[in-house]
Image 1 (tube, rainbow, N blue to C red):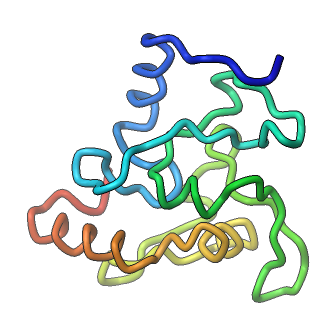
Image 2: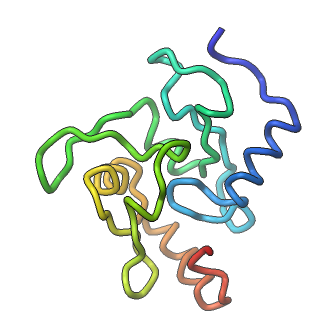
Length: 141
């Protein structure tokens, strides 16, 4: 069985593990207009299981854009690359903030395809980053 309901303690563990932020765009759940989901990193439609090792805490935007994607063509190299996997990859290895801290930029093919596929620099997320920057709550530690 690939889908199952998460227990309250599993949900809390996932939110704590993600420090209350989307594991892709780093938007904090306290300031998001959309609800957050538990994204299957390896999609159920492709045999992914509902296990903590296969789940990421994701804002509605990132989860909606990701859908069942796992591979995307890198805009720089033209080669297919995996999307960022929060359970296996280090965010800092694949991404960095631009000098103004408003946009995420890719260090690797994984970073670039994830930015493109999940639209990590969409206007709403950048607006939240701007406001949080003014309040001293962005970028995340």
